Length: 235
Image (cartoon, rainbow, N blue to C red; front, side, top):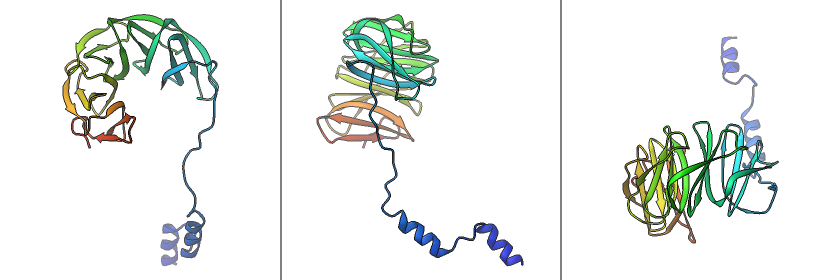
């Protein structure tokens, strides 16, 4: 009849309340998540940074010319950067992987994560972090300079908001956001002009990323983290 038809549309498999309760009980002790499994890189090195783009994971190593790539994050293959340097950070955007090095003016770019070409940053400094957003690569130093590039090849220098040992930069929600060791943050809508912001404490803020509507930063040698929806006001 009509009542039975309507009920079956709402519950097409005719699941009873008792069955739902039994299923919930069976799952009461289940913890959902992903288990990490070990994978091996091709060689031992001071691996510093990893990113994903164009179907590949790419990692770079410190004090060497080593890079590696993987299509699945499990099996890795060696690649060679253009020179031995203190490669610190790698990112993907604009159809390129881009890496920057500390204590030098060295950068490198690759369209496939395998074959790399030299690029030159505006000055020889400790380039600490690079990210991509809104059509630009942005790199920061651990002093007071930053640089931006639309192609990862030609770079232009700009100034961050004071010398505060900048450590990490990311892009999200229309802003580049950088964090540093002295409880300081900075943000920019174009990667060129930067404005100071303040994190909730003077911890050694080490890394920042963006996702699901929030910037999140973490600090080393502590249990401190901070979040912000706009990169300006932090909690």
